[in-house]
Amino acid sequence: QVQLVESGGGLVQAGGSLRLSCAASGRTFSNYAMGWFRQAIGKEREFVAGLSRGGGSTYCADSVKGRFAISGDNFKNTVYLQMNSLKPEDTAVYYCAAYRGVVNLPRSQYDYDYWGRGTQVTVSS
Image (tube, rainbow, N blue to C red):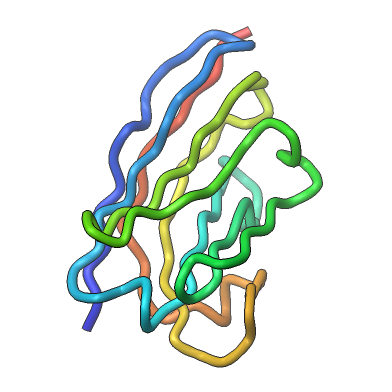
């Protein structure tokens, strides 16, 4: 069982930055790929960024590429999502997720096995 706890959300003006953290229980990075998803009101949950098992590869969705970056700290068992140049359309609840399968960087929410409760990010214009 993996437990994930997100933090770092909040209210920020457009153009600002936030760093989200996802604290994971256990030796998560060696056994799981990690992902960040977001869900805005009235919309489906969408993939934002992924970190491969062991942390060797990363991938960001086109909508955030060049602005967001995912990284992990093995010693702290923590995954980060650095978000820069935030836009009002980035407003959503952001979720951390863990995947135990064999796909290198899964991008579907249905692939992931464990989820955190989410943290709200609100970007004002």
